[in-house]
Image (cartoon, rainbow, N blue to C red; front, top):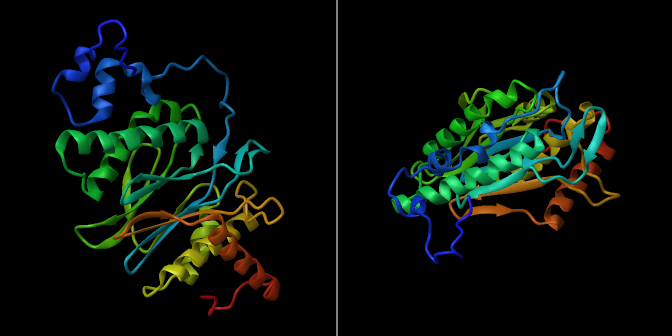
Length: 281
């Protein structure tokens, strides 16, 4: 929604009227056609072909949580993009990873970021991590009509709960149903393979470095069995996006850090081609 101040030099009345602390409610009242779930789609036959993001993984460790994603987007049997970004900061202490229709998912993330920022400005305080997870659930539910036409968005939300002083993970279904995951979680087409890897490698006493190595290993295993998931691409220098959220806030690992982790996993796989032993970490 644009605030055109050229004619009068003043903001429209909508911006000056007290109302809900929800930016989605504000937009729904004044320009509902801008909400992703309110848009009218042309009549189609069959499922709409659009680029889809795939595997997102998350794992907790004492002091925080790691959220990571591969870089591949697919459209049917075609690789639509090799270096898409699927993990974004939601605010200072949380992040969201996207799986599903890429264009809608990125738009939903931007709207979610605005929602949290709008609430903080209106209320003068941040939402609790539980409240943020609930707001995201509402957004996904509003997209149900498009999901029924094949344009589903199924994110993974993770953050550091400052009240409980620990990392937490929330997963969703296409109807907006929310579940809190314990220890680790995955979503997307390669999630079943990534979850299997994390189940074997997870420990309660992981360090931050071990947790980041674990998510890279899980994404590697997912890419090994799921064609829609992209593994570390050394030739093109494309590596997973890895983020860490602790009491110090959100931090995205640099390309050099991600490269080092990916190369270490690849080197270990060359040494043990039949799979890692129990003492991988």
